[in-house]
Length: 127
Image (tube, rainbow, N blue to C red; front, side):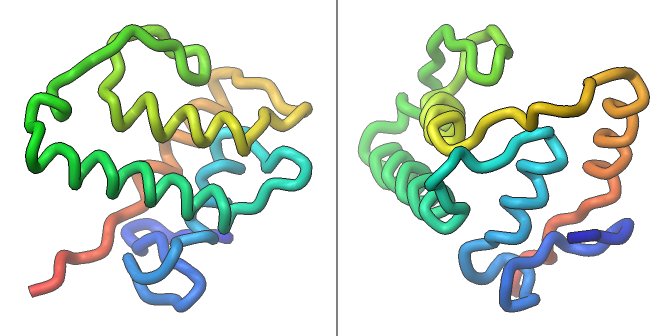
């Protein structure tokens, strides 16, 4: 899936922000050098990511301190203090994704990924 500069990442329906966004999820996984583990699907991954995020948003309404809580974690090898939503979402992603066995993260690849990310845009907010 190829996205042009300033073009919103779109889902299966072609409408930005509607539906599960499966092509966007698949595109970003590949961009960062990941693929699905055997037996996994992007549809199941998207469902679980959405459910976890919705659950944290609902809980944060009555427990706003959740939004500020941080824990030491190392998802995808990135040490630091991570928010609960970041730990939850990356934990789910790690259960479904594995690194592609080929490809090296050299300066050229990092620059290409950075340029690709900078070229993507989010859909305009609804009025």
